[in-house]
Length: 176
Image 1 (spheres, rainbow, N blue to C red):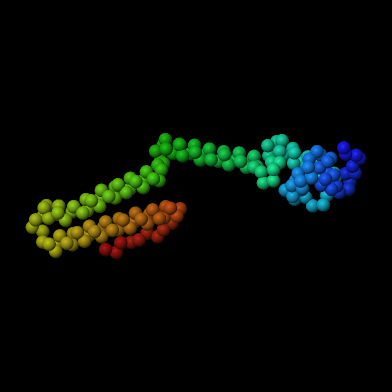
Image 2 (image 1 turned 90 degrees about the vertical axis):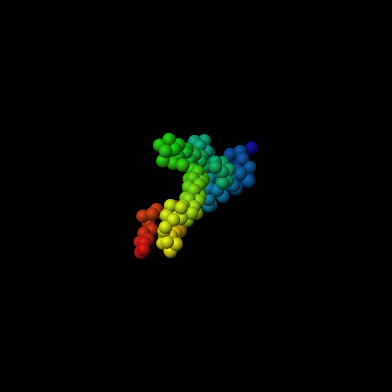
């Protein structure tokens, strides 16, 4: 049982713990987390009561390093807002998952590449009188265009993954 305590003087952790009904270790943890220096018993009691009020109001935690309810609620609200934004973008058809876009681009690229591979035979069939040198020139131009398309697609993907927009990059001017 606690006798008369002079709160105008500093109290030991054990004395304060006995006064408020907690262990000396709990008082030690409180002092450490509250970063209290040497204080009187009165100041310690005020700080302890303030901490209890914060916990009761849902703005603090009794545990050292415990969850901060206000921060947790804010984080949850932010994630919910982001989720709603994504749902709205999907509904407006202005959003698609990256995996879907990557798969679609890969399929389109494969289809275009297959068509490019069929061009020499198609060109020979469509223009049998076209000299071989001219046919080779046409195929070089098509191959150059295909390679530039692949390079531009790769550069765009890298820029987007790096968080840049096309406006941030200098445009290449084709000197053909």
